[in-house]
Structure formats: structure tokens, C-alpha cells
Image (cartoon, rainbow, N blue to C red):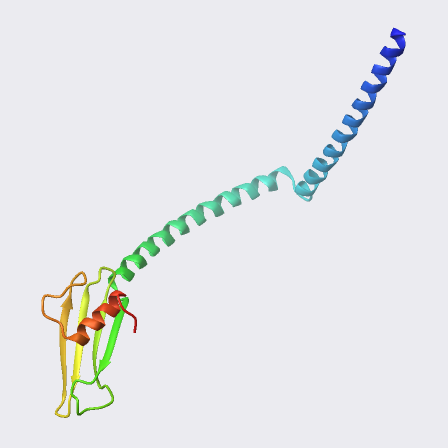
Length: 159
């Protein structure tokens, strides 16, 4: 009786071992195929050269990355200093004139500093006025059209 139980346990153990060996054999075959594909046509020297070439390429990419980062910093600095906010209002300066020939133009940078250009067109001529803007504020009183152009440039109102 003990022999039968022992024999049954050994057969079960052998079956489990056979399944495990087949599983590991399939894994080994897969790894061997990957290794063969990787090493196809290569020897140790050419693999070493390939690694050195990759290392040199990586050094060059890092150097280019630093150059690009510096260029982006310069572009961001220049972009902040450029006029990027615009507000314009066309209007009739005088009731007897048509076509809205006069206009107020506000140009601001990233810090909301810049100027307001006001062009008043009449039959006698065209007059141009400029007022500075610092952080969205002016030191002089603005006309209604100039104020509207500034508000449009600041994004408070839409055209």
C-alpha cells in the first residue's frame, strides 16, 4: 500500500517536472533565437565598434541638446521683449468725415508695456500722437478710443 502511494506521488512529481522542463525549453528557444538574431553577422570587435559609435553619437546629441536649449532661452527672451499684444480701434474723429479714417493702435509686450499710437485724420491733414504704456498703465489721460485700444490689447474686451 505504501509502495503504491509512493509510486503515485513519484509519477505526479515526474509529470510536473516534465511540464516544467518543456516550459523552460520553450523559453530557452525563444532567448536563443533573439540572441542569434542580435549576433547575426557580428563578431566581438564589430560589436565593440558599434557601442563606441553609439557612445559618440550620444555625446554629439547631448552637445546639440545644450545648443538647442540655449537657443530656446534666447528666443524666449526675445519673444518676451517683442510686441505681442495688439489692440486697434478705427473711428471717425470728426462727424463730417466718413470712412473711419482715424485709428488708435496699442502695441504691448509680455509685461504689458509699449505704446499707444493715435492717428487723427481730418480734411486739413493727419496728426499722429504717441503715448507710452508701462505695465498696462499710462501717465497721461487717454481718449475713449485709446482706452478701448489698450483694453483690447490687454484682452479685457474683444474687437
